[in-house]
Length: 144
Image 1 (cartoon, rainbow, N blue to C red):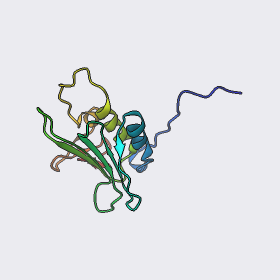
Image 2: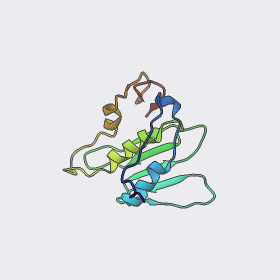
Image 3: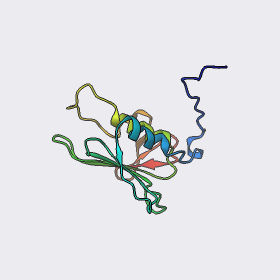
């Protein structure tokens, strides 16, 4: 009998624009179980709403064909404005998970200002001609 592996093999699709949205639980389960985000429950609505423990951040997953499926909002702080990020249905969950991982990662100094676009800039995303939008390195999908 083999011991269970402590690593998970992940195969990424290339080119990324062919990957599709993926499994939303890559994002919702870690936020809920590992980071303590609470969830509301409405069995009549096909959506997920998670709130951060401090109630300053809200993640909404709402499958609406006419708008962004994923929205992450953060309330204003003493020295930073409120902000939001939204992602379409075809944004790979790995990108959204990297964004929420950076959002929930502990920082050395809580007073440090964090740029919510930093994970996307670090991954090679660049500004587009559209107001407040970034394009992936392959320019196949965009985020606000």
